[in-house]
Length: 476
Image (cartoon, rainbow, N blue to C red; front, top):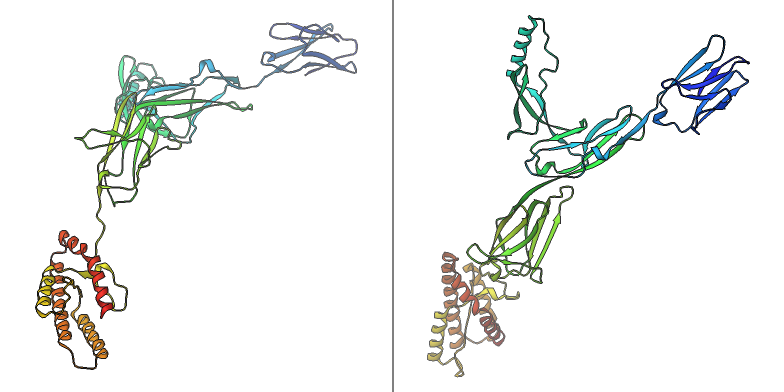
């Protein structure tokens, strides 16, 4: 609304100052714009109203009074326009190969001119390369400025600014040459990480998989609302397979879990294979024997964790298991070897006479058994149905054997107050021989504890000898 005060008899007119377009004459609106209207108060104050202001309404408006000497007054309108991103002139989705250079552009309109800020959607910092003059370039510029100042010329303030092109060499720093008055000035590009990058154009050099993300272009000019555009950047690279385990030991009958990590984009086809290098590999499919799982990791969309569970591990499962990943750019794999771990074994121990006897408490001596059979036949103390098997209780301490033997003698004495019969003397003598034989066997076992065949041979008779011993105890 523009206001103008006039006298009672004066005629008032409104027009645009830039093109002299007449908008109204006194109380009548001349323009065909329905958003324009005129009001007056007590014939002295005239108002020009423009509804639903537009950017095209910006400019100066003139109020004229038809007096003898024409009077006029100007009123100007500054229209503020919120920012708007122009999609046709801005970058959309971008896909490049790892190591390439890429340029992201975001163009916005508005009044005042919008400010453009780039950020990563995941909150990570943006890797940029900033141009800077090398020390040799600075010395050259200073020398050149001193030389030209004597001739009356002044070197521009931006003479050392280099135009960044898309060609760079490997490394964190890149050297360029800037032409200034025909002289090559070396420039250095320094790598840095920033939370936000200001400017319509964001240049990324030698992109890596870590730089793959969605970049947000945010435009603002203090006129709400601010607007933004999401620009995804996809970086393609061949698969990479790694594993923290190269060799794994497993007990028989247990479940074994193997894991590997895969990095790839586009997403790879991942699977497991079984077989050694010299054997033919066999692809593993989910079954009752195998469970396969894959989980893509959070914000890092190019990372996947693969796992293979082998149920009820058996000797035939000992092999190399290979984690394979393949996409359109290549194939990669990692091998994990599984071997069998033997369960821990323990030597025989002496139990109390009144405790429950375990099968590991007894040791077999074939030579002693043969001697006993021969003596049984000579003395006629054994039954004619066949030879009886006898066993000796092993002991780690000789004193424990003596106590047990003494206790056995007392028990027999209490049963028979009469003097010991020849059979009792024979039994005691055989008991002493068995104790001595057991001690010798223990010594031999201690010196050759790693003799697995002897241990297995001894354990094969344990259950049988245990039964015989229990029958002997109850018979006595």
